[in-house]
Amino acid sequence: MARLFKKRYHRPGTAPGTLAAHAGREGAAQATAILYDARKTRSLPLRHPKALPVPTLGEQLWIHFQGTPDPRQLDELGSHFGLHPLALEDVANTGQRPKLDPYEENLFVVLGMPELVNGELHIVDINLFLGADFVISICEGATDPFAEVRKRLENGGGRLRQRGADFLLYALIDTIVDHAYPVLEALGETIEALEIELLERPHRDMLGKLHTIKRELILLRRQLWPARDLIAQLMRADLAFLQSETHSYLRDTHDHAVQIIDLIESYRDITASLIDVYLSSMSHRLNDIMRVLTVITTIFMPLTLIAGIYGMNFVANEHSWWAMPEIRTPYGYPVVLLAMVAIAVGMLALFRRYGWLK
Image 1 (cartoon, rainbow, N blue to C red):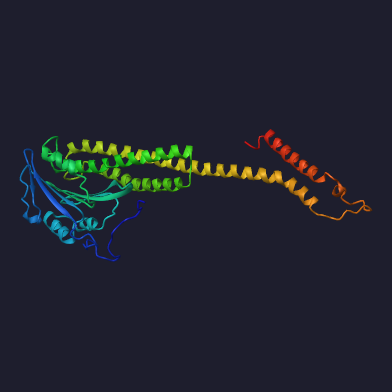
Image 2: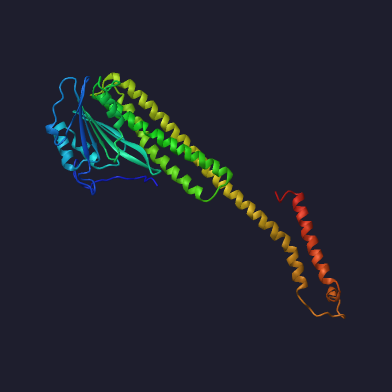
């Protein structure tokens, strides 16, 4: 089940911009660096940021961390590229809300990328830094989501090599947003299967599945709704490091985010409707059961009354006006049984006539 809240944070009262190691995270990041221009790309070892060559005119540098860097790596990155301490703190404390923080020397972007792991929804935290000639991407997950972007960059196709670092930032953001499509496709197929199953043979397990999907849709909405606003902020003309030519491509990514949010809202409405249908079907089924039990009880009420009267076993008293004459009747027992059967059949016929058995 997807967790609605997952965040690592410092102890309350810690000074802003403090970098601290978290259990199980230190040393987990694998770093790669690519220096490229319009003609070629070059992969570089990343032992220390100071050892990287300074991009010349027309060159762009892309540094990617797979996993959360430890405090030492973050401190070295911040010192070399002029990254703000508060932005580095947000990198260390994952689970941030998608946001855009513009600083004097760079832009800082936080996004959450949805993915399905063994059928469960997970949100991967991704942090992006944009400078004049560099992009730094930090992805918390174990799988690199930007492998296709790296392949495009190395093959030299498209516009990635022809444009600046801001276009690479757009390509990374577009990849993150588009990762929601296969997740929503899987959720849509699950919802459709549950809808068919609900109409044909509803069962108790369906309610838990529907609530799980509802929680996952809430989690997706919480991540992608602010992501849409973030992309709209990136299209502002007053932001540094972003060229006006990139705004058109960001507008396309914004359209994707709007479309994804529309799908999420539609799936939420369908899921809520399916929950109502399930509860209604269970209530209708309970009503059917209660109707059958009520009919059986109603039929047996007069039979029970007759059996109770004739089960009182008083001694026959010929001199009393109130003595039960049927006690000495030779065929009293079968006559009473036939009368009881006739009453039951008559009541069933009456219920059927008034439509109470439907």
